[in-house]
Length: 454
Image (cartoon, rainbow, N blue to C red; front, side):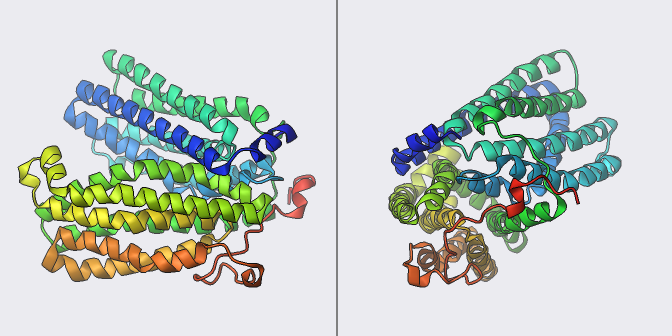
């Protein structure tokens, strides 16, 4: 990043930058969601229900492999890459080494066990190709995370992703029209991933001021992995929070209750779409603000938290007040039992979204261990509450348990994320009640020297 560009960024209101990035992420999510829906229609109508199920099986394994080997780098690279003095080439090198060290053995295991997970030759061949697609996705994820740390380049990388997704849709239509099956579609999926990698590599030097890729030594890679692991743990806890309700509901109650919960949860997923884009845009801006000027970062954080509180209330209240007509209009009268569930989903949105905003602020100041600690507590409270409430209240109890888990940590997270004076900076991230000092954690001193080859 050039000095002139840094000066230009410094003159812009941080909230305006967050709004611009959020709009870019939201637009991209909507466009790619529509393209993904179109792809499912093209493949589903051409292959039929049974072969479409095989396609879903293979693509699910590919995406699962990519998610498993994330290792927290999806957030770490965006946060650290946004700071002045970041060594983007070495961050990229460390992330690639760590991810590939795990992804390649897992992909090899999937290739070797494909016949075990599949019941026909086409699915077996598809799973072997899905392993390759999953590795390619893990590699591209490193590029995507670092590009998202550069606000000026976010619209370009998102536009490139959407363009390649649209091309995949068009090519998939030609592939199925020609009579080709699942292996050909997975080869196409892998080619698109490789094309995205090539596009990002071509944009690299312009985006990162001529920096080259660098391959850090084992000690530096280990240091970066240690920094990334709390993000991996936070992601794991977040995934469990979204799944613990329906999993225990399916075990402790009936399928009808599970269906009511799933229908209401769809509204919550839709309501979180825009906030999710805002959080993606806020992390690099907050990280940069805190790394440059702690006081400016604190002001930006306070304004961001106020805005997200208003946003959370605006998202939750309509679901609470209009639960019954929303369920009836969208799903039909047979889903009337989902209305009280949706009321609790709306109630849960307010602490969920405000807690998420505070977690982003904590990420920006290197307090990810605080996030993990309080998120784990919320998960534990939610699990106990689901087990206690579901036998008597069904889906309503599962939704109420979600609200309770988020409410329990609402004040502690507020206390942990609020800006503190110098006298309280000594509290480290090991205490879940206090945020870490926002002084950014720099790359080890050897980063500027020649790579350590061990």
